[in-house]
Image (cartoon, rainbow, N blue to C red; front, side):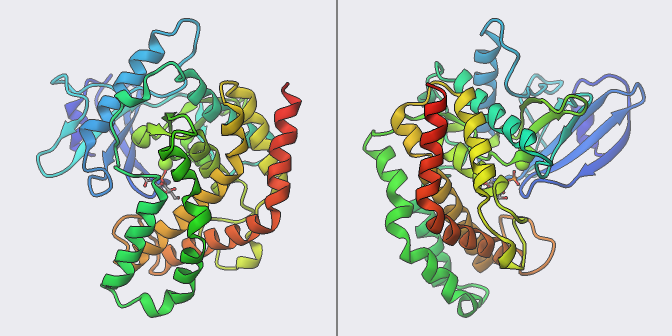
Length: 356
Ligand code: GN1
Ligand code: MG
């Protein structure tokens, strides 16, 4: 049993503890009590998230806002305070712990089994953004500073390459050159954010399909989870990260790069669900969605590559070169997006017009 659970008000006595291995960053457990109540207990990775209090303040502020909106089923999960009335339990040894009630009959999907699953995922993230459109994004803190600031991610990659603490640089020269050659396009979105051309909203920022809870029977999305990266951002981040992961034809760490492509049909399916659920997107934001996919993909690849160079400090791995494999799939996707760029733009335009 994880003793941290005793710090929270729960129904019954903890009877079972099972680790759920799906995220790359936090550690998650399913706790079942003797009354059958179930809770998700999470240990926040404080290497990734040194500012746990910012996360919990953000989540609490938006929970309160969503709860006050009448007639809306909450678009997100909410956490339970500790017995001492704190938003999370600080174990005094660098560990931050929190719980929420397991949503009965819910499932997480690692991949969409059909178009409808992916469309539901799009609706869930679209709805999340849309329901927070009236929330002042500037009130939220940055849980990870410069999380989707691509120029900063490039700088961190350069620094990791210069330091080369593991002596891995020789083996990744080609990948590094690939990233650096694409700097202009990769920085475009951040430039538009800086110049105020795109509105800053409340965004989720980590929109993999496994961050949505689905109803096991109806397969409708219930709400979004994994709220640690909820902070001010661009709509293109949420669209783009979901495409990077969910519209790829292969796993994030696939070694056979011939299998990795952008599935344009899935791209369309996601675009449809997202646009439908988020009618507040401006024309300019919509036009930037393909660039969001491109940017999130090259940025994530750069992060995997930087972490590989640093000795896998951030993303958890199951085997030594997994972060390099992950980086390579992202770069393969980028090549494919470059080939399919005009089609990506056309699809967005077509889906936009269908909603008019
Ligand atoms: C991490 O924890 P998880 O697996 O939901 C990461 C995302 C990456 C993703 C890559 C806080 O998400 O940014 O896109 O891995 N989350 C954080 O799979 O860094
Ligand atoms: Mg996650």
